[in-house]
Amino acid sequence: MVKTFKSTDKSQISAHFNVSEFKCKCGGNHDTKIDTELANKLEQLRTKLNCSQIIINSGYRCSTHDKNVGGSGAGQHVNGCAADIVCYDKNNKKISSKVVCCAAQDLNFGGIANIDSTYTATHVDTRTSNFWKGDEVVTSAYSVTSDFYAYYGLSKTDVY
Ligand SMILES: [Zn+2]
Ligand SMILES: [Zn+2]
Image (cartoon, rainbow, N blue to C red):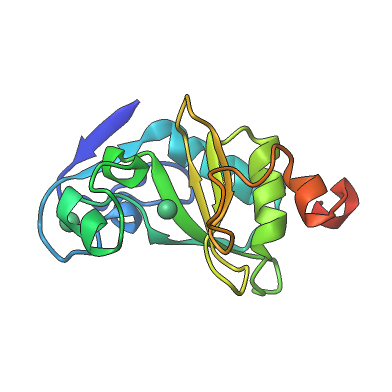
């Protein structure tokens, strides 16, 4: 369920995530929309990968900001259903987005993609149709695979 929060809201939306972490980076003081399912799934991802922390580089985006960062102005971030994240392990080392993509796939996120050439940042969202398994380093296809394990050549023991 997508909930709307005031820009000043600093309440916890789940055990490890605060509403303020999802705030639009445009600097404006408009509301923040967050799908509670997104926060729940991020908690599950945090547990599954045994993360020390997950940093949200971009959560909710207003339409203007989405366009300013190259989006359509109407994507999953604008709906409050997406987060661009960097996951850290217990030694505070960044976890490869290849690993994060596999774990997100196991958790049935609707949209999953590696989003940087160094493979440290991952987009995840809770879309319920037009599922996306992408790799923004590869722009020739919408989904690059139906299975990130096969695509990145990883096994379960590489991921967990
Ligand atoms: Zn904004
Ligand atoms: Zn994104």
